[in-house]
Image 1 (cartoon, rainbow, N blue to C red):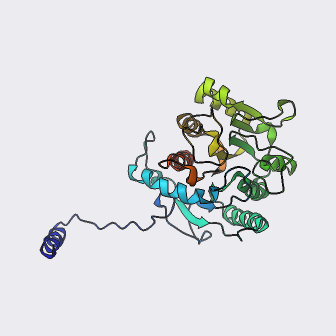
Image 2: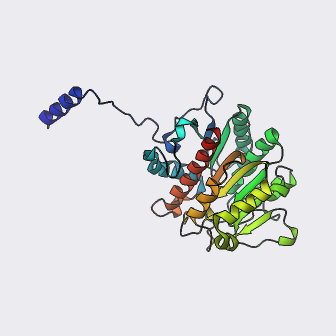
Length: 316
């Protein structure tokens, strides 16, 4: 064995084209550089993990979502020129991963304070955010920070549930957009919910809804037409609850609902958001303990990567 190693070393020394490559950032999303010095970085986008699931009403486990999405993203790193785009992402967009938001486990209030402060810190630098939950409650403190910087935003929301329920507890992933509307964080006249397939009151609902049956009948082109008509030129925030996908495409989530949309449809819609004034995105409710072969984590990672390509195409 020692002799074989010597032969290998001699061969490598003789090969002038050999360049050693070290996988330095194996635990980050897409192996982007890990960097907590946000103010000093020249990055365009900051990736954050939000491992909070104390507000879920169904199966817990989405606190492990950020780790699951980052791990699954390693399957997407090799491609370089990602199909169907004709350019490499890092030629036009610089992205860093700053790790996870810290808070005291078991103390939701510490999470709310820290998550909003974390988002404030990033937005103050002029950078955009890509955030991985965590349950859907994590979106509320993020929107608090966004509203300070941008005012009420248009919301492009993918989900099986409207999350506008008013009867929940203080920390509840099903009341996120009820509170966001009440607090003036969202411009409902320019917001839209996609993939809904649970009960809500259409007569007293502030958002336009494209339910899952409508989406499956009309396809991505029909969805994009409605988004464009609704959102227009408003600054928009994308919130993607992974249970918006059918459980056959995303089994690893806390509140799965049958008859959802396909990963293909969702990717085509995200890809079609070129030209919109997008200020940020979160992908939430990935619960790896209920996943199979990383199907859900891979879908979440791919949707997030597609969002980054949209930002890169606009910068390009």
